Amino acid sequence: MDFYEVIHSRRAIRKYKADMVPRETILKILDAANWAPSGMNMQQWEFIVVSGEKKKEMGESYGRFAEVYTADWEDAARKAAFLQFARSFGGAPIIVVALTRGSKDETTRKMHLESVSAAFENLLLAACAEGLGSCWMTGPLRDEASIRRILEIPEDREIVALTPIGYPDMKAEPPARLDPELKNKVRWVD
Image (cartoon, rainbow, N blue to C red; front, side, top):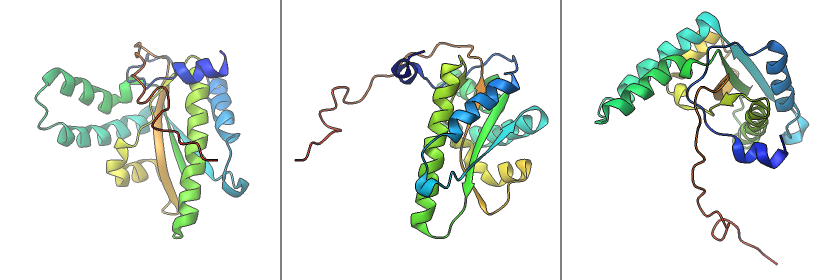
């Protein structure tokens, strides 16, 4: 797939086939993440690939939050779909969790978060190029304490984001771009 085609075709996927993704493919995607630019070339990202019982525990955690989050939703079908997604991460066979080193210095912390975000974007684009779906998620971090406990994440690591990874079992339409001609989002300065 052409680079720009990958960028334009990547979508947030919220329903996956149960088929396991081969380890070699996961490593290929993580290698793409590992080639991201990073502040001071620290390459300060770490990834946890979660499946099986630990993935189920993460779904239980996110499901509890989702029940509270959707409590006042009037659209029953939308609520049920969201709860199903939250409890199973859309049925994806794996979840990839991105971590970085923590820092009390706000400038360093920001550099770490930006670097891991660049790596995470590479991961999402590589997954798309491999015919896989993903969905950049931070919602499950509302119960970060449970995720830390489930995955035994030390306190000196910060969770940046996570994504389910798997073969898509849905077709996501491209959302409209805000300011597609870039008239308001770009300012030229001479």
